[in-house]
Length: 112
Image 1 (spheres, helix red, strand yellow):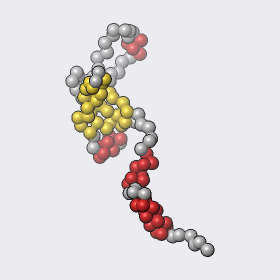
Image 2: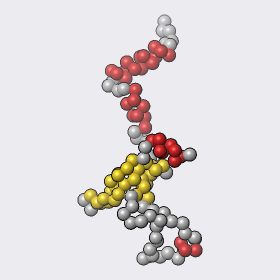
Image 3: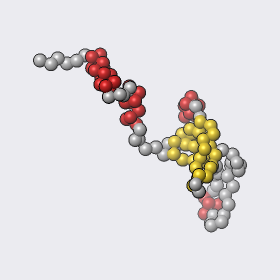
Image 4: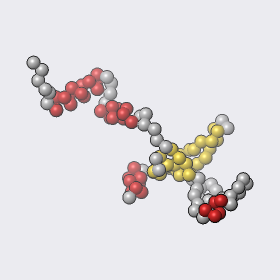
């Protein structure tokens, strides 16, 4: 008759199975989230304007941003600042070169 395994025995068997399949504990944990979609957005700058001024915008209007030309872009993932970068062109397409990645501790500090 099969007896239920203790938690320690189950964990040991799970680790042995992972090792057989070439997975470490970290690999298995990461595999779970690799296909989760996230929203990546780049912010050139921002400005607050009254609705009255917003409604007056039309083709050719220029909106002055709070950030100067040449300053780095902010790179956000799901609304959290993760890096700064600069616009580059690659084969006639725009891209972003990351120039500074925000440390995990700084990201946590900004959440508060």
